[in-house]
Length: 214
Ligand code: SF4
Ligand code: SF4
Image (cartoon, rainbow, N blue to C red; front, top):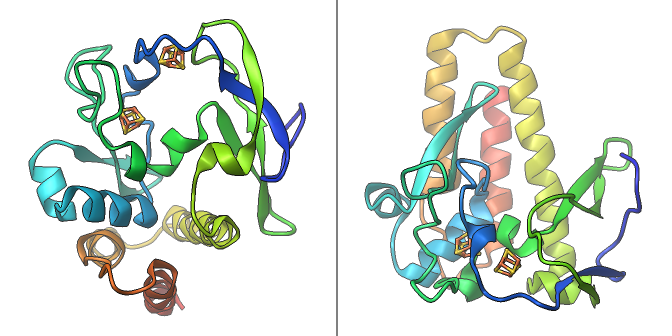
């Protein structure tokens, strides 16, 4: 990774000061806006829909990633299809509970395998509008308990990495199918109760999932 790396307390030139609300950054993303368990928990709480209802309604879809089946935000059909949550006036209709990757844009995460942490970097491309203002990254993300969220993001990232490595090492095809169904159920289909702390629930499920492969 070349270029400057940032922590959440840093300021970065990422705010599009001349944003005209064209909504272009919410078009043509195909299956690239990957959703993690926090995203699904927030989407479900915000929309009142379960993971399976969101799938049935075509708001989200599943893709294959190194042998794993995982969810992403679905774009409308066509090469340049819009996110189904983009309203006619070019606004995000789920802004308070939008997914983590939407919050990040135009930032990416650069993981450090030695420390199991990550830092942020500015992704090239995306919006063509000139002019960026500096904004504090933590404010940009707008995630409550950001430290805990970053810790969770790292745990999820490295857990997926481990499972992908396990599958790549030649796991039995029938077991791989069962494992995928199990992981979808544990991390996505089973609702995250609103009255419970998301991170507590996630860590219980992570421990359960890890025990399957140990
Ligand atoms: S593409 Fe740029 S100008 Fe258009 S909505 Fe996104 S940030 Fe704003
Ligand atoms: S969820 Fe909102 S911010 Fe994310 S792609 Fe859809 S409309 Fe854009």
